[in-house]
Amino acid sequence: MGAGLGLKAEHYIDAWECDADGLWFEVHPENYMVGGPRRTWLERMAERHPLSLHGVSLSLAADTRPDAEHLRRLRILADIVEPALISEHLAWSTWRGHYHPDLLPFPRTDEALARIAENILLTQDALGRRIAIENPSHYLRLDGHDWDEIEFLAELARRTDCMLLLDVNNVHVSACNLGFDAAAYLDRFPAEAIAELHLAGHSLDQDGELLIDSHDAPIAEPVWALYERLIGRIGPRPTLIERDEHIPAFGELLAERDVAQAVLNLARSAS
Image (cartoon, rainbow, N blue to C red; front, side, top):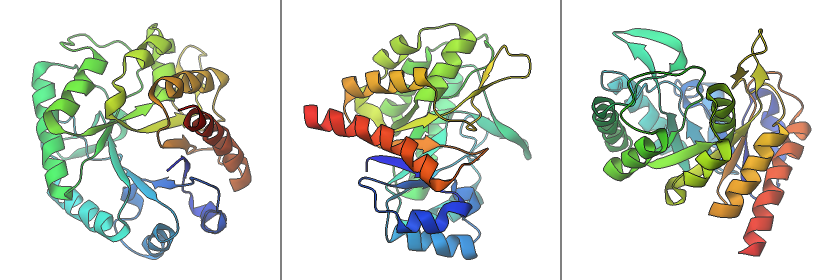
């Protein structure tokens, strides 16, 4: 697996026919767990390209266990398409039966660490697979942290044998919003735990003060620079180009994907 793309319904035919070296596709499994034409097409795509399932609703940081029925349906889908990777977010989105349309932050306390580790272990047991956990985007400072974010993620990996998904755009967005050094963050991130990388575009909020992880624009030059620096340190890793709004033609996304593939190829040839 080299550089991949998020699979969009309007690109199904182009994606099926594309034979770019190292190409793979990622989907949100929630869009495919109920069956129907989308599931059928995904099954066909799995016969031709590697797939990754990137969940958005397990709510691993909530104060309750992941929904058992959701895990059951996710296991069925994973058994059918045999994804190369399964990932989720370090966030919560459900509380007492209420679902929120966002990935919400939490204080990185010892209690949260124990709870999230338990939820990851439950998830991995239910799926029969290891999963990767993604670092979040941040828009404001929260008080009450016991753990540095990188140390928190590394400890989750140690306790649960999960992998990590490092989103480079999330790091850039968070660094700009909270005022820390993105390059220093990436330099500290544990290379041995990284199973996948994400790249995406971002935008300014309406007041022009915050960067938003909007996935609605091409990848910005500072994010490309951080990505090249990271690959130079850790070597090639499966890399996804995310675009969820203002989706262009498949060829435009493929050209952006080819930039990432070139970075991976260069690192591979240098090793």
